[in-house]
Image (tube, rainbow, N blue to C red; front, side, top):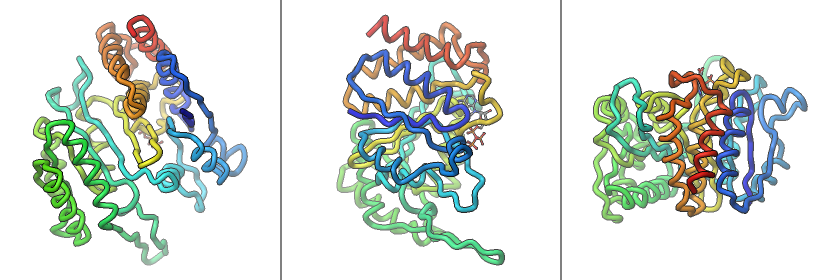
Length: 330
Ligand code: ATP
């Protein structure tokens, strides 16, 4: 197993080392391939990512990624979007689950759902023209793209409570009708109970009744926006992990960005990156990954938490405490 490790910029350089300490605590045979990509690399060399980097990543099985600051170059192509396309990482998976003892803006902790977002097409198709009088981006919905994301979401729902919510805006965006139809057909064929909801209504309902949902499947931009909004349900952007899954590769990244406002201070919360390690181990089929939940519950109970959660611990101290628990209890 080969793992490409991309710390990136800003707090990516703090949370990924903490997450790696946690990964190392499992003592697995795993080759790490560090890659320097992003804004700092662009400043130093004029290139944020090269073809050679993509080839190196393709020789790995999975990627652990921190965050990248946007490069202020008009010709810059998003590194994340490029990697997702190159590795065909079609499913973006974002679990939204409260951590013990931590509540978000709504003050509730009775929910546990997963947003599954189509990751390769929709409004992020990359087909666009930018002008001074008119600019446009093509929103692409294909049967193939909709089928495989619906299939992924249904398989996930079957392992959970068999409930699927299809989120769309087909009353206005005609392209969403295809997405909705394919999701309905796939759910029916898989024996998964489903309902559907317009994205605006879903945003409201996720805030008011998050406990009603289990697996939510949607198109690219809706999933992007809803899942960031749901970070507020959990309590901090520093707590929400994500996985980008394809047939061959998997890519794990915290939902937060490079957070330049707190970068370099050693106070960023590494828990999202640490939960990414749990998702990586789950993807590798390692049942011992479960101990990460216990370790996190233990450090929260001992108040070894970062300032965003009201604590005083540094990024490294939190990572170290989680790793220590695993070494002592595995
Ligand atoms: P980028 O341009 O890379 O997206 P950003 O600052 O616009 O960076 P985020 O990095 O997602 O966006 O962060 C938004 C805010 O949330 C930050 O200003 C920071 O205060 C807070 N934040 C994000 N991640 C964390 C974290 N891991 N720990 C603590 N606070 C965080």
